[in-house]
Image 1 (spheres, protein in one colour):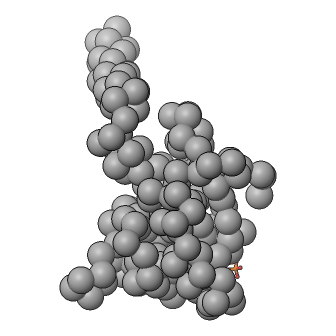
Image 2 (image 1 turned 90 degrees about the vertical axis):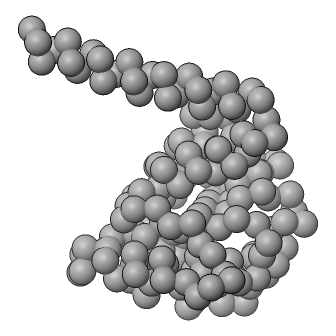
Amino acid sequence: MPHHDSERPLVGVVMGSDSDWRVMSDASQLLSDFGIDHEVEVVSAHRTPEKMIAYGRDAAARGLKVIIAGAGGAAHLPGMLAAVTTLPVVGVPVPLATLDGLDSLLSIVQMPGGVPVATVSIGGAKNAGLIAAKILATSDTGLQKKLEDYAADLAAQVEVKNEKLKN
Ligand code: RP5
């Protein structure tokens, strides 16, 4: 897992295992593409429970604005972080070899009332990065402009594909 830590991260990208990086790197890449300072850390709900609680409790005071948390299988990390922080937590269900990530999805999405995790699709780490960018953009006009340009580029790509279909 490459080094992705900045001096003053606004987003924490955490995952239950380094084996989740193959999926979670998409969130980190998206944040880098938008110039958003972020940190990357393995924090396991089951293997390092005390570290997980400390990470969640300290996150807001350290200056983080959003946590993106990915895990696979019995994926308790996003929900447990949400339980101990006031920050928005975006959950990424990481698909494993068994059950195709449905277990991860259900573990993350079925939170009890009062403790929300904004859950993206199975393997949807890129969209998790975009949600974090959109949250930060509510108080950052420069980031708003980048998101507008991103959406315009998506639309332009559709028209390029339409032209190819016609020729
Ligand atoms: C979960 O267990 C992790 O998030 C990972 O998706 C899964 C398997 O972890 P490893 O055995 O690959 O470390 O907690």
